[in-house]
Image (cartoon, rainbow, N blue to C red; front, side, top):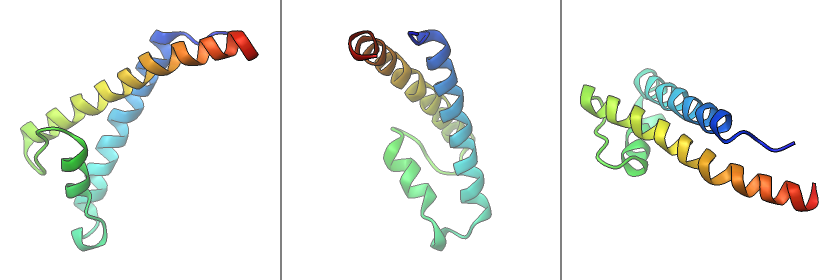
Length: 86
């Protein structure tokens, strides 16, 4: 059965947005010397700045869009391979 690109892309977008929120919360709760979350997120998300409202919104949108992108790329590949070998 082929995957639905819309369902998978939205699911991954929401998953990555929730993951971003959890990473920010983790970074706020745990002392920085134990995780380095701000450096990781700033390296992964273009123009993201730690602990600014604008940076948080930008990071949330970028995370969501990365999830959408993964779904758009993954689903056709999966459906193609599944149709050949599934």
